[in-house]
Image 1 (cartoon, rainbow, N blue to C red):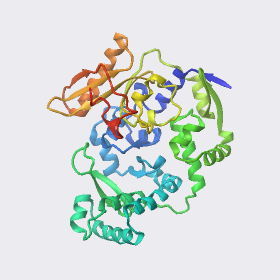
Image 2 (image 1 turned 135 degrees about the vertical axis):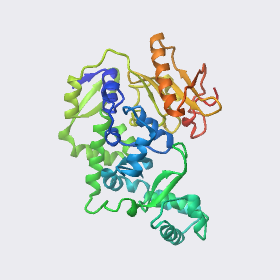
Image 3 (image 1 turned 135 degrees about the horizontal axis):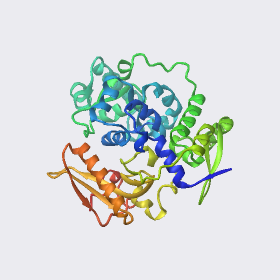
Length: 391
């Protein structure tokens, strides 16, 4: 069995994820395809995750791919989470994962105290209102007779691909979406003949292409499939997968046969690669077994109790710090180092921070270095989005 260092594996995955300067490209849709989708729970995450991977990226580049060319779309899929995914993959991803949140829908209505009949009546009204239109939740509420639970119903309709989330109401940081009827937005998209088992197998293989090598636990985490389903799929892919080890980590890793050949021949750069990542970035969120890129002592600074990742500073694929941006009278980015960096590394980090600051604020920024950080594990949900708010 081949054995590799964590550094070699990190560099290999960084390259596949377009996070090494030499692997950045201009094609936004290809980036999204190659990395397994953009986590879209937070509006800013999608832009920042793309910025760190693309050449000369502008905010309008992503918007054009999603809302004008419609090469990408927002759907709920793996782990019941909202992603931006390539349009060509939406049918298979939907079919592969929809059972994960179908029970959630039943419980959702039950917790609201709403019957299926009440929901269907409201959904029919929302469909009529949206026919031929693109509207925000506020706009829909102006036209619907019963406004109670409208926001909840819209969410459920998006999950069922009755509706699709379209442009933010205002700026790229606006959490409010507009909505369109899915069939009007993607009139030619077909779900006929798409097999669930084949779609699930496709998703596991796609995971390896984007984020392998990985453990069985990683696959369960990322796909949302249970262990029985995952093991059955791995047996079906047996001839396409090899086993490897990572030095110092007592776990079995799996990798596509073609990726193993690439890994055996890849030449690692001698340069130090400094990377900033957004919260919930695929590189950080793609694995449950995370020893290769974060020290155990630092885990609670990077992840909250649900396993969600905050915005990180990486050196050669390993986390060395945390960063955060603050919108105020003075455009500010805060940084916190988990360990004191070498002078040359800190200089690289500051240059990268200035670059992302210019992207976020469209102006020069102030950089504040925090001496302390409150660990995320004991904080309220959602604070992965503002990790240095108490600094």
